[in-house]
Length: 83
Image 1 (spheres, helix red, strand yellow):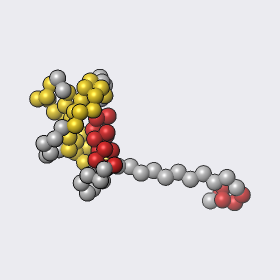
Image 2 (cartoon, rainbow, N blue to C red):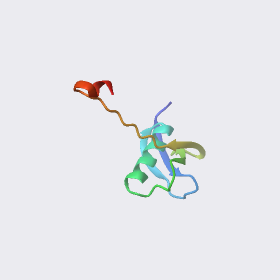
Image 3 (tube, rainbow, N blue to C red):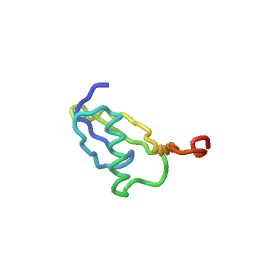
Image 4 (cartoon, one colour):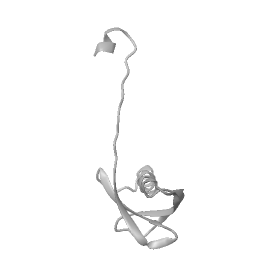
């Protein structure tokens, strides 16, 4: 996808955040990560984000962004390696 100057907001909110040159999906992900980092993300595991090009503000794309936490364990000794 083409990287352009993008803006994003949580669906239903008025405030647009400018993220610079990136894809729509990258802007949506960055917005959710930013809100999560500062404790401003609404409850839930998935959020709807709207993105737009700064040059074409009337065309809005909607995205569902979900949080995925992955844990990986690697054992290095003896019987634990077969667990």
